[in-house]
Image: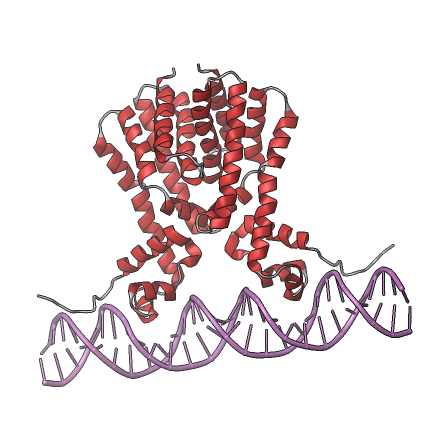
Length: 185
Length: 185
DNA sequence: TAATAAACATACGGCACCGTATGGTCGCCA
DNA sequence: TGGCGACCATACGGTGCCGTATGTTTATTA
């Protein structure tokens, strides 16, 4: 059937659009009326699904936490069984997806406590993940902790620096650096 | 003399306060009227020194560029002559000052071209600086370039991650990691 | 088919900020 | 001492957003 129906929305549609705008223009651009226009409705719709703007932002953070930890880790774990290869996959993943949205949330976190808590949890989980992979690879616990810290901060930094280097060169370097961090005693 | 005079301002006072608010609350909080209140004047003063808000923001970026490259590099170079020690000093410096303001500018840069250009220049200069230090230390050019990239992104990442680790432990780790990157062939 | 509730539109008051226009105050210099 | 220019205050119109109140449509269920 054709259903020339005007496509009623649900709350998820709003958070999804919210995350899209967040990634592109930052939190301050996530506002009710512009979002409504982008969705082709009015804010009468918004205040049906949410009590206020803050509730949308909180909802966005929940979605992002899921996306940024569980989903990422699951993707990496599905790629391989070997710890080294999993780290390589994680590295490649950072260069593919993990850009704008992560950046925007981190920016947001610097002056919002709720976002800061979300980031803290995500960082802790991801760091623990990298650390465990290094331990599984055979590095002693203390060294693994240290080196995971270097590795993780480097991946985060990668998302925030804007060096005029080709994407390919940066990936290659990151992978080469990874190898030297894996081999060393 | 006592001069209970009402302290006339200049443009520099505005950019300084602008940078302070930027560091604490992000660009979106850098607004004319709130800034005027913080300075104890009205916006009549602001529009005497600047043509509009954008001019203030540009002026802030100019100040920051100076602060974030020339001043930083000069400080590090004054600390020691030896490349290794200079890198250690740079690392310590990141953990002392380089926090909130850098973060705020990077956040800003993700949805503003002027800020993005500023960041790009700063990153390029700082990266080149680290890279040259590694070359001076004796590493072959190709390795130095790669390793400088790891080092620099890691320092940037350090400013953006919020792991529940003590400041001291993080500094120690960063310095230990630095050593292993210096020694390796 | 009438009643009900979900999803949205419309209209409103209020606020915070932008930028302009214009008038006031102070120090300086002829 | 009168005028001039730097610096600031005051007042204004305009805009974009928030949240509320209340009507309007559509699907669902009795």
